[in-house]
Image (cartoon, rainbow, N blue to C red; front, side, top):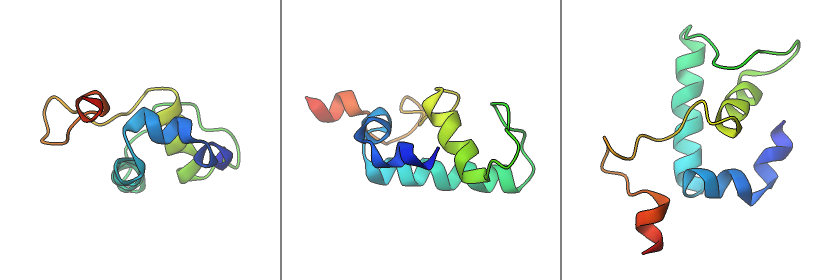
Amino acid sequence: MIEALKSEDIVNKVGGRFKLTALIQKRLVQIMNGERALVDREEGMTDMELVIREILEDKIAIDYENSDVPSPEELAK
């Protein structure tokens, strides 16, 4: 699952490496504080793998509408 981090696809999906890192970090804190997983956790799956899977399956994302973070589309203009 961590192989997904080697691809630019996940980086582009979120809008950049910094945004991806921030999203992963925020979600990892939520998981460690007891929030439930949004995808099925396979046996032996780490929290990091779980978060990456949630991003890849579009279960979590940056809420561009309610934040001051520019979306990838706005940056492309």
